[in-house]
Image 1 (cartoon, one colour):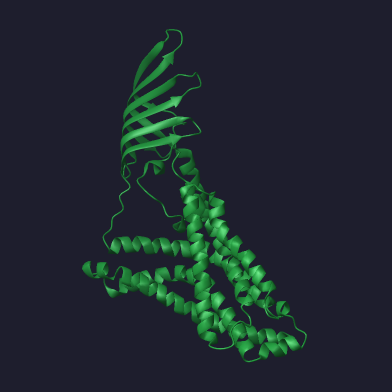
Image 2 (cartoon, rainbow, N blue to C red):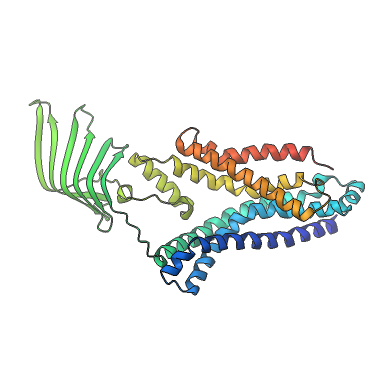
Length: 360
């Protein structure tokens, strides 16, 4: 049995490496040709283009891994079946489930490994690739924001500023309205607010505060040249004109960004769905391994072509379903966790049904 496992795994690994390189090449070429005319217009040298391709390589490997696993297992088992080798294996009393156990184990190991690879390598290189591409194409990111309004739920406050300067971390013409628990709103007006990194709070200049005085039954106005309070701790990131990409953040940074969006009252469903999707995508190699095993014995002729076509069709179906569910999650029709895990759970059920009816 050990010799049989060694033979089948050897075939699989050879096809896996070849297919990963093939799909990575396609993704790299698509990325290069997508920006080719912009590279030419900006006079980007070839070595810089190659540098971008190298930084994009780890991300391409992660994208290519699921479909490569699907194709490699389907082609390996299809070849063995077409050559009547699987018939001999089954005739010796070895069940399909026992024979394919190493492929399932490899799918599980690749799932765990891809998650670690994503966290330790892909996120950093993909972020560097994006920054380098922006620099080469002279696309400057501007995080300044005008007419910005933020809701601070924990303190029951609403911030409004005419302008946010991200370089200096300042707010201009600030108006803050909050509920102090008395039932009457408190308003703070300031010409300028500066972020104090040491105190992790805002420092307001030329401040006017309007607060209800129950004894006089009227609003009392107080003025201060400088005013600060540690509770005014809404971070500058909340005021940025930005749509941050979760794919460029590690898990800790992604959780912090989602918490910031929640606290500021900004839309967070899309970011939360992408965060959940990172976990669900990890198990894709395992699911496609189960599906490809279920294709055992389906193709006797043109095994290479049929394995490739079936792999592409199943992968397309999976990604289309995931795309639709993610879109519904971002629009609020379904919870973010359903949008992220729905396609995976659907294909788990599909793979188990197909595996149960597989030829053995």
